[in-house]
Structure formats: structure tokens, C-alpha cells
Length: 88
Image (cartoon, rainbow, N blue to C red; front, side):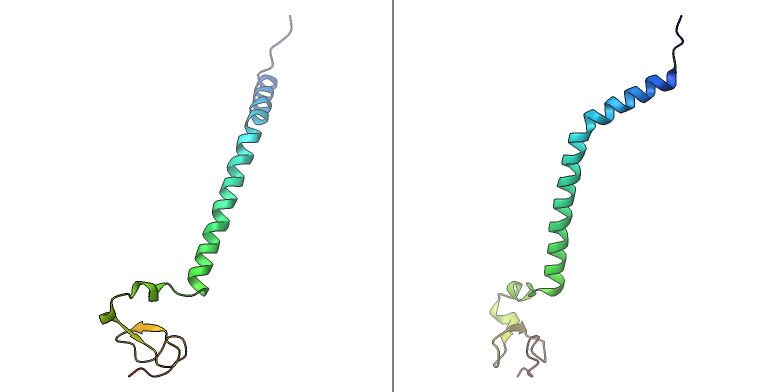
């Protein structure tokens, strides 16, 4: 009578599970990488790109345009955030 080897049965079961999970795991890893790249791009754009804070300053009472470059600055700003010209 052949003996049952529990380790061999578990190894076979895990190998089959690994084969079955290979395609879904590849898909999940790919989606994770895509999300990570978009998140990094968003972070870098916000850190080094044109600030969107000027877009939020839409009320005319809160902004003051620079006479030299035209950038919209906060009303309390003393200098332009782009060219450095002193504001009124």
C-alpha cells in the first residue's frame, strides 16, 4: 500500500494554485504600476509645474494682477510670484 505524503500533496496543490493565480496577479500588478505612475505624475506636476492656486483665486477682490507679467497674485502679496516685481 503506497504511503500518502502530505508534503507532496501540499506542494502539488500550491503549484496548481500558483498557476491559476499567475494571470490575475499579473493583471493586478500591472494595474498597480499604472496607478503608481499616474500618482507620481500628479505629485510631480503639483510640485514643479504651474501652480493651480492662481486658478482658485477667481474672485476679483482676492487677486491682484502683476503689472509686468500679468500673473494673478493674492491681494496680500507684496511681490509677484513669477517675476518678483513689487506689487502696488
